[in-house]
Image 1: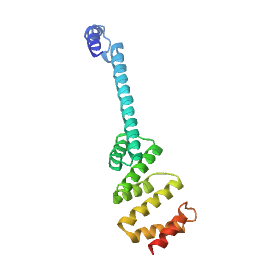
Image 2 (image 1 turned 180 degrees about the horizontal axis):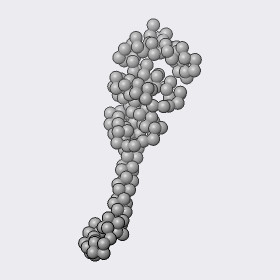
Image 3 (image 1 turned 60 degrees about the horizontal axis):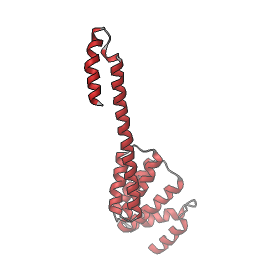
Image 4 (image 1 turned 90 degrees about the vertical axis):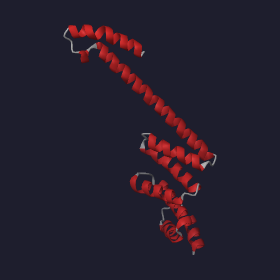
Length: 172
């Protein structure tokens, strides 16, 4: 295809320049621009398919409890893909759960804090993330965990209030 474009360019551009037609407005350059657009569009579609495959592989590894490889793939998916906010949140939550399950509590806490403070989400998801954050703190700072569980316990709208009551009692 490129050889054909080269041949057309060699044959027609010199003739059009003799006719006092601006070479950047010729039909051949419109065709070349269209061909470039088509190749860019094709690249975007291929990139999207590759990212979808990456996401599916990450979910599969997550479901098979392969936390380390799932983390790598979710992180790559999040950083390499232009995501809608809801897709970003969903993939980020999976990444956080993989971090928590692999024992990387500090990184999970940082990711939770980022999501809670920088991204809009449902109240239920916020409550779930606060719970996960308290669970992470159990491993790194029991006093902070106790405070977070107490906060959840005192939140009448929390879906985790009963569980938080039990955790506060256990931590005394």
